[in-house]
Length: 193
Image (cartoon, rainbow, N blue to C red):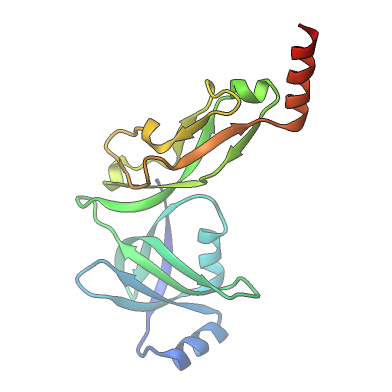
């Protein structure tokens, strides 16, 4: 997994008023969970935008007043109109302790169904898995080369070494649907026989 470093400052006080003042000054109020104690801090809004305006999932090295924590982003609260980040929850991770994270899906190959005129529909862009940091890839590959029209890839058909999938086994990752033009072509072909 890729990593990035973010600088933070401890928040001396917490509360709604303090959070509003933090946002006005161009920073985002944050909390780090998962360690021995919760850490309340702020990070620069512009620096943080490089982390969340991307499909890449980062391991974030938080440097808060000289102390470094390894973390992942658990939750971001956005403003309903401006889409600016209002609050961020980080989760501290450790090299020897498994943790849950959602990783992006990477489609591999061209499906037989798409070659026949079907349309690929990606239903899940990220899959929740659990494992150690050293075992986590940047993306989760899903091979669709043998997928025909009307077929789908479900969670129970996926397997990643040293990772546990934490999604419903019946959840559909992607499917190839019949398009109108492909259906017409099939009807015309059937009528010629």
